[in-house]
Image (cartoon, rainbow, N blue to C red):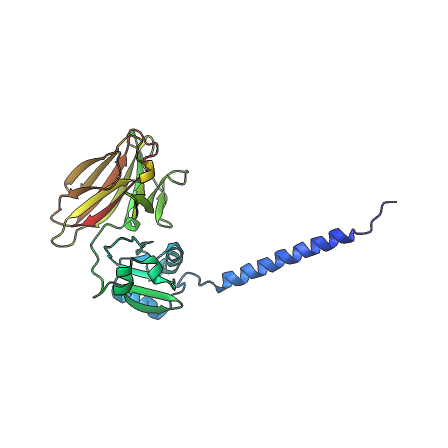
Amino acid sequence: MQDLTPNTGITRGVALASAIILGLAGIATLAHAALPQAPGGPFDAAAVARLTELNLTHVYGLNAADVGWLTGALSQSFPAMSIAPYPGGEAFAGAVLTRSQRVDHWLPPKHAVELEVEPLGDGWTLLLPPGGIALPNLPQIAAATVVLRAEDGSEKPCSTYRNGRFQCRKPGWSYVGQAKVRVAGKSESCIWAHPLQDATIIVAYPSTQPTEGRKLVLETALTDGSVGGGHPVDVRVSFGTKNITHVHPDRKGWTRKTIPRSDDAAALTVEVSAAHTGRRHFCYRFVEQ
């Protein structure tokens, strides 16, 4: 006769495993419940009112965790706001929001001393430049549209803007958007736009006008690790009726190209392509001078 008596060791093992799984699920549920959820996220009405008062067009998260929180927390109240990683360097250009208790760990010493610190509640801190914000009027990638133009002239849109980027093809690196890369030995923030085979990347920004008395400058670079492939990247910029072409060489460091100023606010388009696309880890950014 077949022995139907339960194996006590197995039964206890299954019970113990089930208890552990249920316990972990309970912990995960509690942890999830403790996290502020969008809309509103960790920002109460007073904090939203303060951010509205400042009329910010974009903010920086001090680290990756901050950027993730901000993306969820601000998407409902400020859908057009650009949220990006803090760019670093010595040129501080905007407001930073962070939950870090070690601000001095993430900022250059000069900035950590000079920035105005304003608590926003629920662990958030707003960091402002001395004397308030004087942001340059730079094109914002979050407001752009991105398409791929094939050799036959047909165009295919990339994904909608999400998590700081537009995804254009299946490989994870085939996107246009915010990136932190190493250029000339330094960690730099820029717009990643790796050229794609048999296509031209077209980034179309809405109406743009540099700050009064200043000019828009395009900076382009290859990441340090990709230099040495021997092949350039072709860039074309249209700003209103003004057009410039730029061939970025296969070398380390930034190259700069001043864009002729348009008399009035005008649409701005950046096109990126390459005859040889392998390891062309290309990025660009705009600055004012």
